[in-house]
Image (cartoon, rainbow, N blue to C red; front, side):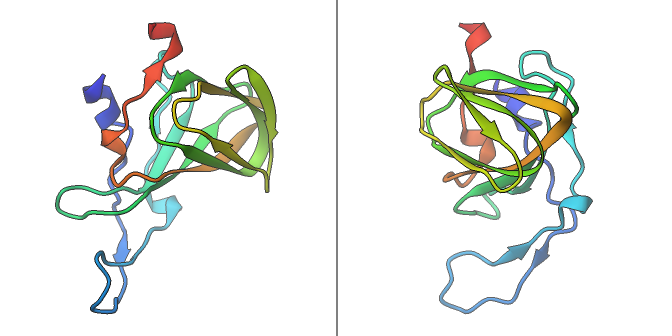
Length: 152
């Protein structure tokens, strides 16, 4: 499972380290999502979701959070799963349903959804597809342990 998760976080690619005040612990960063390749969409365990992880830390370049964009074609899914850190989704384009612990929630542009740590959640895109930003209060995406419900 860990090997598969390593593929979740895209290389930052054309990230720009910004000027910083000397008192900041980590350098500010600007990342253009258009320059980050899509990952995923090929493993049925996860569903058809694809993603671009924009901000992600490593041992060499620590960060305080993870930020990315999830993308779904019409009817695409992110299978039900859980993980310890809380997560947020913020709708960018299209529409869909995010089910959290059995309760469905509509997502569309401008809608923010908070997912508590440990809550089971999954997503199904509507007929026009779906794009949302996601984020975790973790410094490294690879440290997040996904537990997919279908795996038991």
